[in-house]
Image (cartoon, rainbow, N blue to C red):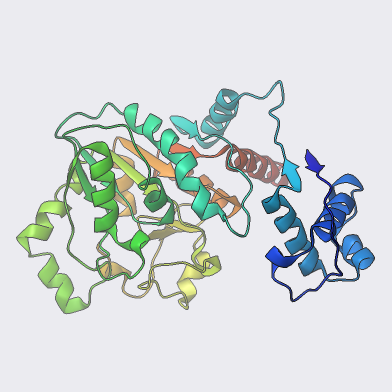
Amino acid sequence: MATTNAASNGTSPNSSADASHFAPTLLYTAAKLYYDEEATQAEVAAKLGTSRATVSRLLSEARRQGIVRIEVLMPENYSQDDLAARVADSLGLDSVHLSAPLPPPTPSKPLVDLMGRYLAPAVSRALNGVGLVPGDILLVSSGRTVYEVAQFDLDRIPGILVAPTVGGNDQPEEWYQTNEITRLIANKLGGRANYLFAPALPGADLHAIIHSDPAIQRVLELWPQARCILMGVGAPPLLRSDIPRFVPTDSASLRDSVGDVCSRFYDRDGRSVEFPGSDRLIAVELSALPKIPVGIAVAVGTDKVVPIVSGARAKFFNQLVTDPTTAQEILMHLDMRAKESS
């Protein structure tokens, strides 16, 4: 439900103007037409003598200034527990942990800047349910979602060992720096960080050296002993604007990939998708993931639906942390596939 607040001092639309300089009356008029009179953006643009792109900016700025206030009301028969149970049952997961509904993203607050704050409490609930004790090993993946969650408080689980699932100390983006994510998660939980000082995809000569280095071996030997793994789920690689530098996005084989976990790519059926050099990748193997007692995937967004479905059915993880909107989209996707196959 949207409400509009009247304002004064209008000017004519200017598609090149900075959104913050739009006149209040222009913002109000665009919002009134779109929300109250249910005109399309094209119709609003025609009435105001401007473009659809400018109308989109007008509506975003109207929301930012409070001229439009959007209120999302939970239906009386809505139950997050029921939604979580339906998703878990449909995907064959042990449990699904839902965050509070995420607010709609805006140009100044995109989804990636919102999800950490909302997902962190759900991640804490999931980790608390594992029953980790001092000395247990928790593996963490790289990726934007896990990195954003690591910025916020998590319930402490002192004495656990935290280790990365993939190399990455040569990656420029902080969310692909797996040692940084390991440090953040370990500090939040009160655990002890174990660092992997290795690139994700070393050259052939360095690969042999890495596997003979005692410090690196100590971390690699933690992987099969892990009791739990916390991992992000990547969107289809060829549709992403943000991806680790070592991934050859021009590789024809990646066309079959619907997503990845721990930088290991897989297709719709959960089969591993290789790319040139992936045999040297310093990362947990897909085949090892179902052997870890608790695998917690964290993912939000429409582009994560197919990777989540395929990864769950391949048993790469047995728990999921997501938001209600993504959970509903998962059910709609599964319903559509069921209708197509019937």
